[in-house]
Length: 492
Image 1 (tube, rainbow, N blue to C red):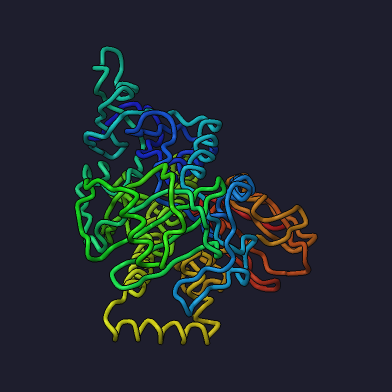
Image 2 (cartoon, rainbow, N blue to C red; image 1 turned 90 degrees about the vertical axis):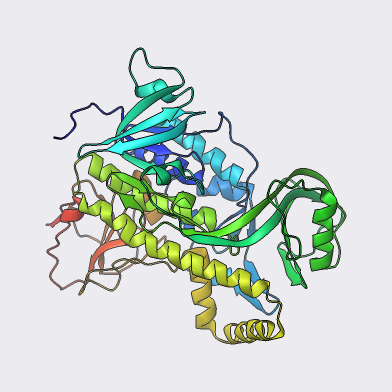
């Protein structure tokens, strides 16, 4: 027997980090009632670990009208140096954003939170998930905290209650309560213990915008924020202590001196933290009506700065699919494509970030020799450098396409010029964009009609997340079945 209970929100998102904020904001902007559950008190914490925004993520933010604001706050870095002999020239990226943006996570969160509030997201702060059950029609969340009674009805205990939704997304991090509630394991292991983080001022800032090196047992990374502080990440292989062990500035200085030769006059630490780095991935991103995204689905080493970026791209992939399903415009099968597309990406990020950190911390002579040989090879072969840049920045990510599909299907499309403006401006409507040759008219349904600014004759249907759903060349059969997307396109 199925449940007939009324839903309180069409979707509940758990976790108000970058992933949850982007996802909830997208849903609300699409007209989907959404509640965002967060165990922290109101206000964005500045105790953040992520500090870079990659090109693909900037494109997704551009599709929401947010990228230019963040660009003004951060420091662009066009040369991404991985090892002494290998640098990736990001000016060669086929993107409007030919750099990585050095920007603290809290700046990204502030912008995403403002957007979510303006879109009408309902927030339940200081509230945790205590459990959940699901049936054929929805999910019932058991909550604890001041916001827990929001959907529990009159007479509910102020400190506990339930919230009913058609779908739930767990974006609640490494220790995800949602993941635990659906019984998913989180296999993997800790790869680096006792990493130290600090935001400090430097009396003598490094000459390079990004400074990184390993020496003996020590590794250090330094990058600037726009407000005059620098983020320092360090690791001493010989000192493995619990995360709870107190951290002082002298310890951070010592690691930096060993790895980089000097501590740059480090002082005035506004924040310091010790943590460990795990490599883990959930075996599934969907269990019935419950989804996982961001660190709740995958965590990995900080090498390459891909953590927050991968989570934001998870959200961009899932949000429009959930909106279409909730509004009855697409079948449930569309929701299965979230895991099919994003799980392999998470796995690839685990491999690449894990490989980078192992190479960076190579200690034995033979592993150092392998690192040097790989750097020399990559530096000499442009295609290898381009592939590495595509992987780290997200520009090279593509999704599976049906057999016989046009070569563009499943690929990210860059910010091409249209007669109507830029593609990523057109994507701000949150809908598909149909790009047709000049002079051609189509009955597009909800899709935005656009035309190439050039003489190109390919017809391309772009998904709301900037990937190609369908394409055809002029002169070929253009009957198209878009049933899974809930879209109908006809030409006149």
